[in-house]
Length: 82
View 1 (cartoon, rainbow, N blue to C red):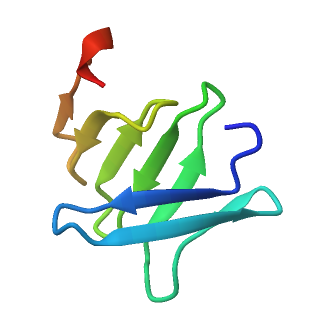
View 2 (cartoon, helix red, strand yellow):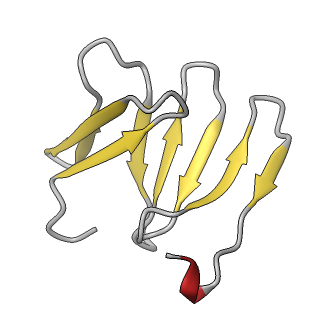
């Protein structure tokens, strides 16, 4: 994540949401209630307004998806999948 100053999340509808890093905090686009946090491992966690979470690795691949009740799906990617 070092040197990264923006991140784009594309939702399930194909809409792109550009987050900007300023002062150590990721700022969501205007009107967007999602919260993006960097992870020390180099990935990100995206928390939605409904408290569901999506976790991404340093390459931007989705690694887990959890709803507000804690039900989750974990994803594994082979090195050739990207």
